[in-house]
Amino acid sequence: MIVTRIFAAPDGKARIERREVPMTPDASGRATSVDLPALRLFFRDTPPAHVHQKHRAPQRQFIFVTAGVGEIELGDGTRHRFGPGDVIFAEDTTGDGHVTRTLEGTRGFAHVPVPDEFDITRWPLQEIDR
Image (cartoon, rainbow, N blue to C red; front, top):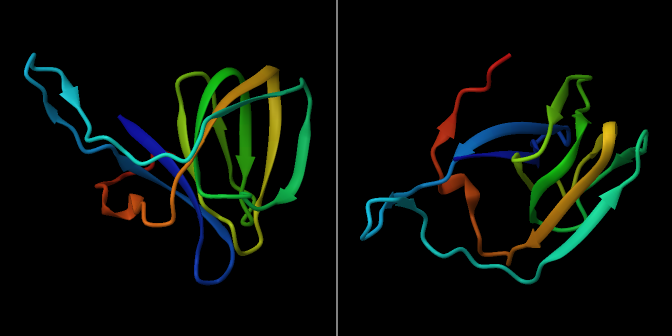
């Protein structure tokens, strides 16, 4: 399982990288992660054609995309599409931020903020397909 991390690089520009969720087989043989810390859970819908101009993540959080198709635009102009089933970890709470756009339908999300001690950079880094 892959999580896309959005973070602020030392130059303040938003970047993305992909991290693999560490998992091991459980008693039934299914790949399972350890329990992860979470602060709460909330849901959000974003209407069709919505553009959220440059902004930073308000908190470090997992974002599970449940509906619609959107994109994230980084400071270098690159755009990355996301749809149902994608998992994002937004932690660019500093720096220049990013732009989000709804491309198709109403985008649905489940947000799960995490405590400060959670460190996704311990997870294996994956290549990004271009």
